[in-house]
Length: 359
Image (cartoon, rainbow, N blue to C red; front, side):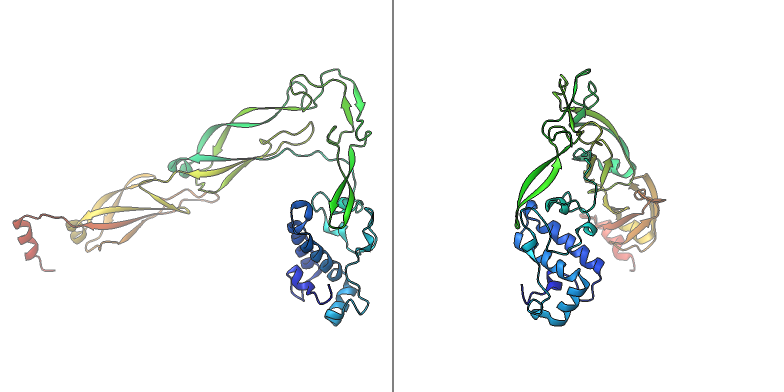
C-alpha cells in the first residue's frame, strides 16, 4: 500500500490524537469486518493504517517519508505473522481496543490478557409498536399489553433439567464451557473460542431434561404486562422495560422490551414538540369590534379575548395550555390562528349598513 493516505483511510486529520485514531479504527473495523458482511479489502486497509499510525515511531517515519515509507524501512502492515491462527508480526494494541465482535483477540486465537471465563448470554430484546391516541400521549395512560416471548420455565427455574436429575460434565466442551471453532477471514482460517452451545457455558449437562421446556430452560408463551405511559411522550419515542424481553438461560439476564410509540393524529389539534396548534373562525363584527370567544384546548374550553381590529390569520398564544413536559416542569403553549368568516348572500339592508360604515 505504498502511497496510501493512511489518515484518509481512517478519516482523521494529520494532527489527530492517538485516541481519535483508535476510535476511528474501531468504527471502521465494526463496519467492514468480514464476519459481519463487510468489505474485506476496506477492513485490511483500515487495519494497515491503524498499525502504522498507532505506533509513534512508524507514524513519524510515515509523516516524514510519505509514499516512500515502505521503501525507507518503515514497513507496511506485516501480514506474515498471521499464520495458522497465530499472531506475531503486527504491533497493534488489540488489548487497548477492547472487544470487537466478541473480542478481536479471540478472532486471532489469543485472549489479550482478558479472562476467558464463560459469560451468561443476555436474552434478546423485543421491539414492538405501541399505538396511542392523541390525548393518551399528551396526558399519559396505563396500558395492558400481551407480549409473545421466551418465558423462563418455572418448573426447572430456567435450568433445563428435571428435578433430581444427575449432573454430568458436558461432553462437547469437556467441562470448560468453551469450544473452539475455525473462522474463515481475510487472513485465512483462524481459530477462536465461543460459548459451548450444548451447556451454554456452564460446563455441565443434566441426565434428564425438563419435561415442560424440553431442556431449553424456557418456553414460548405470552406475558401480560401493565405499562405506564408518561404524560408528554411523542411519536417516535420509546419506552424500555428492562428484563421484559426474551429469557435465554438460567442465570443469564433476560433481554429488554422496547416499545416504539405511534400516535394517532387528531382532527382538531396539531402538536409540535410540547406546543399545540389549532384554528378558529370569528365573524366580521367580532374582528372589527373585538369579543370574547370560546376556544377548545387539550385541557378543555377556555375564553380567548379577541381585540378590536383583529386581522384574519392572526395567531394568539394561550400560555400553559399545551403538552405537559416529559422531562421537565410545566407545559407547552396553545397557539390558535383565527380567520375571519366572510358571509355570502347578504340582504339589501345588511349591505346598506356596511356601506354606511366608514372604514
